[in-house]
Image (cartoon, rainbow, N blue to C red; front, side, top):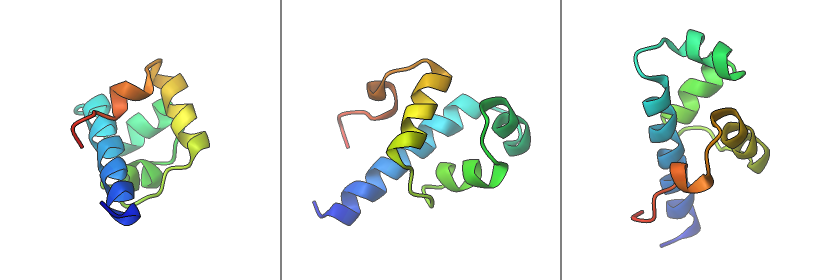
Amino acid sequence: MQYADVAASLQKQIGRFLRRKRGDKTYAHFARQIGLSASSLQRMELGQQNVTVATLEFLLKRFKCRITDIFDSEE
């Protein structure tokens, strides 16, 4: 697997995690709750935004979860 494929896979996994966490809330409402902009949240959910290590750490702390909760080992 090439670097671009790995990066895309990781972005998709972050997106799926955020989508599950958002549930039926709007982008704007959920983004305010977690401290992100609605546009960043939407791009992350769609796998269109690169997520920095700092942002990943922020999400892990915000959701009080481990990195394995976001990234499954199957992909």
